[in-house]
Image (cartoon, rainbow, N blue to C red; front, side):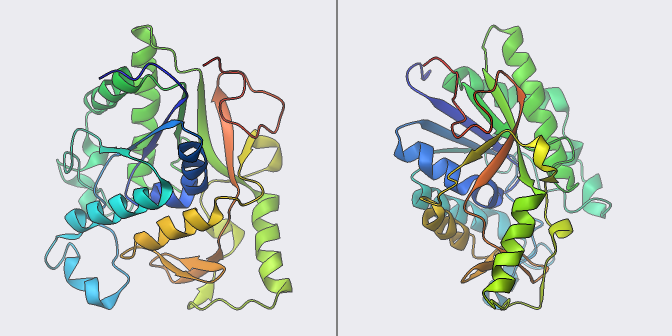
Length: 287
């Protein structure tokens, strides 16, 4: 059934957990305010590296059941954020995780990296026809850090927006995820000033983090005051196989601690910005 009233936000991500790390506070905020929030995840994340030893058997080189397990983790994360509309592109398992750039998994015919762009965009277009989002959020052209599935998710999202426009469906604003360098550096400095020690093997640097941009490049910041930071953290904890959260730090499989950022930043690439930096992705959008 087509959604025709109220604010409607569509987010396109590559794997379960990407949404909570990048947009958890944003999703929680808009869901709490009554916005129809739709998440489309493009793969099940089958090639992820499993962190807890008790879940090691799920890995692709063992039982290869990580994908179905991560469906459950994503559902739990969405419950923490209050998001009820979450889907997989083309249905669960339609596209397999491609692994990191340059690995043999990139060549699998069923992986997302090998997907026909217009076919994959067509699956997303079906969602756009139904939801009619005014705002779309996805990655930058490099996928934040060069992961093939993130790059492909960007391509699919942008192509689907073009196809929607051809049908007269106007997505008023398109944003890419980003993080201004000054905020990243300030986050690490706050941890150092507080004497906070990473509970992991090491500590990341700003250059280790995805989507870092110069301050002049971001146009919007959501949840600057951290009102939804606890919900974001809870959603990240739900992705137990992929994320370790400890106090002010979290780490992925590289075991490099990085600060948890409550505020989430965006670069507007289509549409007209409100007063910059915007504190509302729907600024200027008539609803």
